[in-house]
Image (cartoon, rainbow, N blue to C red; front, side, top):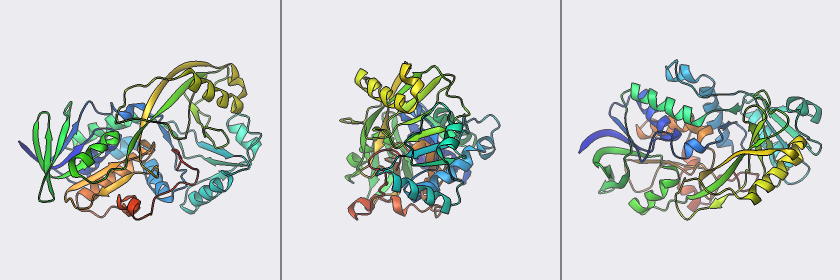
Length: 394
C-alpha cells in the first residue's frame, strides 16, 4: 500500500486540470489513477467549442475564467511547449421569432453585465462574418468575439505534463474498484493493482461517476447520453476565420464550426441517446441521423445541400437532471470531493473547475462558489435550469 495526500480518479481534461492545480497550490503527494490513458475517454470525443455564452450565470463565470487560461495557456502552465490548439474565431448565436428569443436576449444581457464583450449584429453584419450562412429568419443575433474552439486532448495532456513536472504521479491503466471509507472518512481506494491510501479523494470520473453511488450509497443523478458528430464536406470553405455558429432556430439546435478546408463540423444541441450504463465506445451513426442533421445544415448553409459526409463519430455526455455539473463535497462522507455531470460543458469549464475543486480539496475557499453546484440542490428544488430547454447550451 502506498500513501498520498490526495488521490484523483480520472485523467480526462477535468482530472488533469485538477491534478495540475493541486500541484500549483502546493500539494506535495498527489496520485492520479486512470482506467485507460490520459485524455482517452470522453475528452477525446469533444467538439472543443469554447464560449462564455450560457443562460445559467454561474456557468458564465466559470467559462469566463477558463477562457482567460486558454488564451494564455503555455504561460499559465509555465511550459512553452504546452498547446491548446486554440482557434479564436468568435461565437455567433441567432434565434428567430419564437420561444428562444427572450432567453437569448436575457443571456446576452447577462454576459454584458458580467463584463463580457457581446455585440448585437444585424443580418448583414453577421453574414459578413459567416458568408456561407443564410440568416434570413434571424430576429436576434449575438456575437462573442472572445470565443472559438480548441483541442481537448491537447489540453488534457498539457495539464497532465505540467502536473507531473509539479511532482504529481499519474498511473494509467489502473481501474479503481472501491472507495475505502472508515467511520465516514475516506482513507483511500482499492484498485485492480492494489490499495492506495489518502485522506482526500477527488472523483472526476465523468460517465463512470455512477460508481460513486455503488461505493457510498449516495444518489448519483447522472446518466450517459450518446451524441453524434458529423463532418460534412461542402463546396465552399468554412474557414478558421469564420465563427462557431449556434442555430437556435433549427430543430436540433445545431452547432457548427470549421473543421478545416471545406469541412464543417456539426452536431445537435439537444438530448441524445440514453445508454443503459457508462460506455464511451463508438456507437452506430444511422443514415436517418445523417439525413436529418444534413437537411437542417443545408437550410442554414444552402451550398451544403450537396455536401458529402467526410466522417462521423459519437461522443458521450455525463448528464444530470438539470444539465449542469455536481461539484464539491458530498454529505456524510469526509474527504470526498466530486466533479461529474458536465453535460457537454466539461472542456469549456475545465481550467476553472480544476482550480476550484483543487482549492476545495485542500481546504482553501474556492474563488468561485461551489454552492450552486452542490448535489443537495436537486433535493432542495434549486436546479440550475438553462433557459433554452433540455440540451447542452444551458
